[in-house]
Image (cartoon, rainbow, N blue to C red; front, side):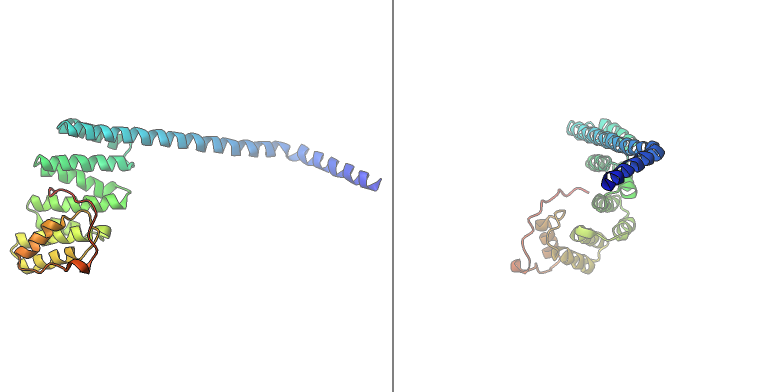
Length: 229
């Protein structure tokens, strides 16, 4: 009998607790549910925004494929305004910069690349933009600015590409010894897909340098980009 009385007392205590705390408990549960719903809605909004940015980036590429650089610039500007923190905005600027280089509009290319260097949240894209910016600055006849761009931060996985540009600048200045030194440093790096090693080998041999032995390093199987900045 005492057991039942004990259970009865416990039930009454629970009822009393809910009577006193039920409102706050329900409110707490409601807040959790609202927070979850808000997070879910925010995630859906982010996904939608990302898909929209990806679609706009593809439009930039398609417009450039039709040789409409002016139209691509408008699309890239719109993408930057709507989703400036998205990597798609950075990639759109990189694409427009490349098209500007191909059109010999180096000033426009420099502006785009500088924007990516200054604002991107993707460190790999920042390094790529620095590399291309240095090449553009060299093409514009600003070697000191190009070297400053290369030296601004570590090259990460692009050490060979950075060394090659330094070698090109040294050769422009008539410093063949420094150029060869930089080219050999570039050749010693394996896996940098920005470097065309056939071209690099020609640069080394033209300066009287000896190519690294074939068995000294594994072959570089990474894709090779074009020669334009």
